[in-house]
Amino acid sequence: MGFFDSALAPAAALQPLTAERLQQALTRLEVNCDEEGGNLIAQFEQGYFFFLLMGKGQLLNIRGTWRGSLPVDKLPVASAFAESWNREMVLPKTYPTVFEQDSQQLVIMMAETNHPTGAGLTDEQLDELLSTGISAGLNVFEALNQNLGEA
Image (cartoon, rainbow, N blue to C red; front, side, top):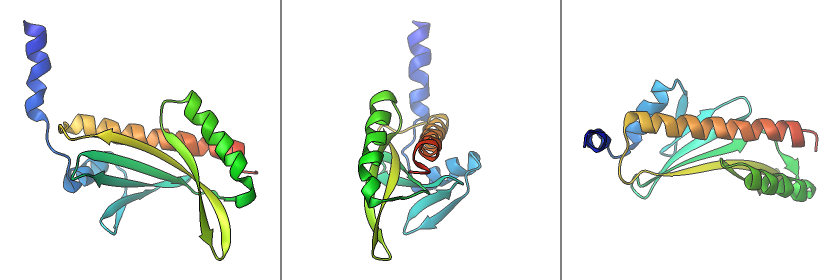
């Protein structure tokens, strides 16, 4: 029964996800974050990421925002990009959103991953979720720069 014994042993190392553990993991991964309104934000050249704990640590939401923007008349192009990406790629979910800046409507693109964490996780699992969420989001941002940067 050795195989199953080793599979059960790590369960004791599972710990609830807290804001403190999230900050420690980002520090381990050398991701520089600022805190704004109780949320952690990491800045990258192509975009930025919010790291949100939802439902008292039951869900980790990694939400990236592309630094580019498009005029609102390009919303159909942005939607087509998102539809194609979401159909062909596993991660992350991407979608356009419209916002107003200086009385002008603009389209920005989001990249988002959600990870259930209610059962707790090891530090290694948390590091992997963060690395995957960030790198997947950066992949979307790179594709956006290549496909919509001049839209």
